[in-house]
Length: 303
Image (cartoon, rainbow, N blue to C red; front, side, top):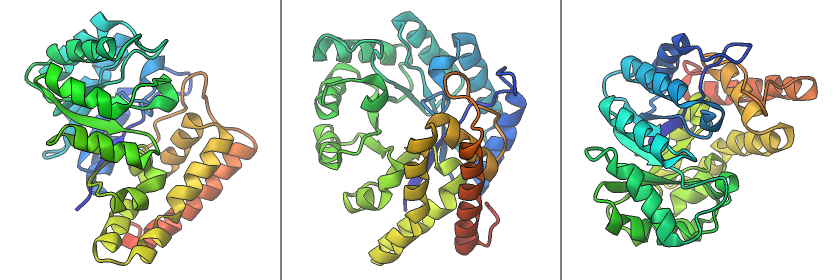
């Protein structure tokens, strides 16, 4: 069975203020869709556009709202190591099941040892919570192989236990998983799910699961029973969304689409903002298409 975590969007008002009263609806929606965990304050959550106090408040809201049995992962990466450590300690105090961090992302760490040391220092601030390395080179620009990072981190940080691999290099994913036996390897490219399942992926974290988790469950079920053609067919909306989002603005576009398929978390902050014009129309078209696909797999309860 595929373990699905959603990389949750952070709710903002129309003028960009944090609004935490949306979080209970987000948590209930994900729980109803069979999502196992929420990954809070990551890329989809626009952590880089938030200050530390907002990130703390967001985690506390999720702590209070998450249904029984739903896991909580908290991204605590920061360009300032001291603040990353404070965020990690706070996440642990809130009962997070996973604390994760990107490495330095305004300029890469100068050596592999420096990167691993940075991550180990963050992990040490939450000594009772599993720690995960968040690999997303499209955003951080890191040139280090995650397989090498994970192998070194496993030796340097006693709590190191997971990697969130958001990249399309499935060969490197396989090397990364093999680099630290026992690590939980979460795959983060929703648009490549069938290929990932063929490579043995059993855990995922992604933004599209906020509104499309029932489809992902159907894809995984078809794959598990050996009907790979059906799995690929069911997965088509994920590929369509990814292709269109790349043309129409990425995070802001995806947030608008997930707002159509679940609780409205408001517009993205700068530089992404709210889609308008042709991109707004495309959100509506895609939302209708995804709702039809959802209706086909679960009668529409989650659409």
